Image 1 (tube, one colour):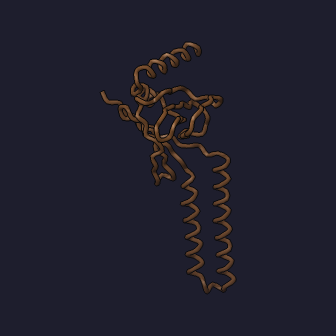
Image 2 (cartoon, helix red, strand yellow):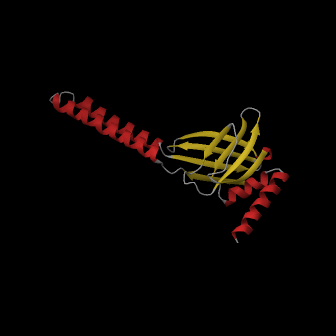
Image 3 (cartoon, one colour):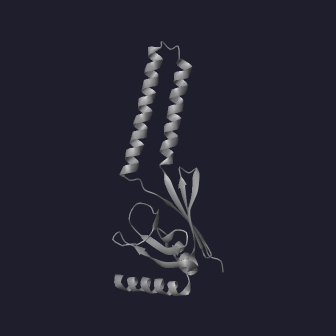
Length: 182
């Protein structure tokens, strides 16, 4: 039986993103104000050029602001996990593609979890809750950790694609945590 799931996660804005959006907005207002002052100063001689500049500046500002909106898509197809980053709902980039049979660990990620890796791929929603990590070793990148927010359906599909020894460890750890909560 085939395993397939798609999940779309929207990254929450942080202080850095809010600051950058504010800079873009301030820049748009400043450039538009300068162009309008130039229009008035020139006695409306350069009206078409200044109005075109204002429209272009506003369009560029909207384009840049939309680029700050980031989504991650997790796609599990049988034994493969693909994670894509979608910027501004217009640009898609494959962050990583993993053969689940090569995964060494798949556990919940807590903020104090230490991962000794060469590469860490962050594809999480920014809230800090319900995060998991996948740990693999590759020839090209070395030790890689992927931190993300899979929902229950995606987690079950990932667990189903793991090699049997890792799957047994994950199921035992999840059962242990569930009995600890009760």
